[in-house]
Amino acid sequence: MTMMEDQAAAIRIEAIAKTFTLHNQGSTLVPVFANVSLEVAAGECVVLSGVSGVGKSTMLRAIYGNYVPSDGSVKLFHDGEYVDITNAPPHVVLDIRRRTMGYVSQFLRVIPRIQTLQLVMEPLLENSVDAGEAKDRAEAILAMLNLPKALWGLPPATFSGGEQQRVNIARVMVREYPVLLLDEPTASLDAANRQTVIKLMNAARDRGTAMVGIFHDEAVRNAVATRFFDVTEYRLAA
Amino acid sequence: MSMITPIERDEQLLVVEGLDKSFGPIGACRDVSFELRRGEILGIVGESGSGKTTLLRCISGQLEPTGGQVLFNSRRHGMHDIFALSEQDRRRIAREEWGYVHQNPRDGLRMRVSGGANVAEPLMMNGRRHYGEMREQSLNWFERVELDLGRIDNKPRTFSGGMQQRLQIARNLIHNPSLVFMDEPTGGLDVSVQARLLDLMRVLVREMGLAAIIVTHDIGVARLLADRLLVMKSGFVVEQGLTDQVLDDPQHGYTQLLVSSVLQI
Image 1: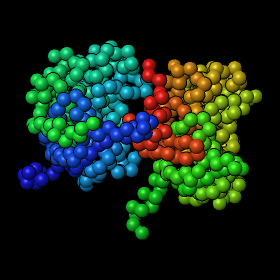
Image 2 (image 1 turned 120 degrees about the horizontal axis):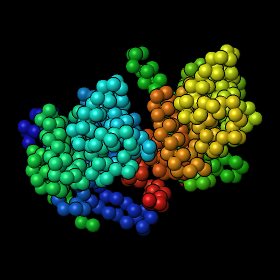
Image 3 (image 1 turned 180 degrees about the horizontal axis):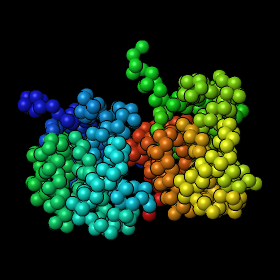
Image 4 (image 1 turned 120 degrees about the vertical axis):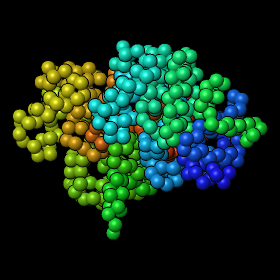
């Protein structure tokens, strides 16, 4: 443990708990987990494990600031200091997401009608990369992910599941975020594309990205993980 | 004073504190507080009658609140309660630094003058007189909102609903405002036109670095456009925060009801 604390942690989760309160169903409480603490250092890839429903995605979303933990804190190393994302003002959370933390979700959620290439360039443009360089980098990552060139100029609404997922991955991997959260990024990919994504994830980890991920595919999990974190131990009975 | 403080202060564009508005015994807005920074898009959601439009009309200076303050950081006056300014100063801020996009484009356009004149008028109201320049800027804005340049001399009543709405948006952005108020800007448009308008508004807001407050009852629109959300019910703000957090992990019973009532396609 001491060694871990010596290395600067990129993510510092301290005793978080999550219980959902369903106000419209007689204030039913849905407990998920409690007292979860985890530190993730640069260059680590922590894979969350446990059966479906144990709270892996909930934990990932709590790190991203998408879910509000009922207790505890999630500190991210951002701009030279630790910021607790669970009570940071919205503009700070957005800044963390823009510069420090990328999140590959299971579903692509974007404004309809925008071209794929433009969608992938967006995170770069938001970080003041000039349009020419953004375009080159977006094209490079789309090519690496084997997305057919004919699709680059189209909005992804009509793409297959695997194609949309690759757009989703490209949007995040086009930048080098210090922190990456990955929720089943390879779920709908074929074997060849899965290998490409594994390669991308390993390259990110090797250059010092701190990663937390959920992967149901055992081969993927073993290929990227530096350690496992079993959420089951913190489970609360419903 | 250090150099940092005025800059941070400067980032706040609008601060609403304890705003109340009642019509006789009816409280339309109650104790509403929030702030807005430059470049931020704030969505206001809630059911009909929850006070969304009244709030928008109060903070845009059209309705005087019964209580509370609306502080706006204007170029001329700095951070100042707009209702403590004279009517004239308040109108000048509205003319120079704000835009207001109505739900019904007919309320925001002048139907008897040409599309081009509608777009150029805010420049004239701000003292511009060079006809050629204004014409050029109008043409430029016709292009930016994807209107056919050949229609610039036509009257808006010959435009479709979607075209009228884009015309209204051009009219409200041409004078380079710092804050734009939008009341259900995509209401009443068919979905393909709506998607196009959403994309357009997002791009324009980012390119111009302006702040926007968008009233909508459409949760999908709010999710795609807004950075932050205010959820209103019976005049109160029952919940506010980051858009995806409010919609994915709503804390208040009413927000939970609102989110769970959205139809899935």
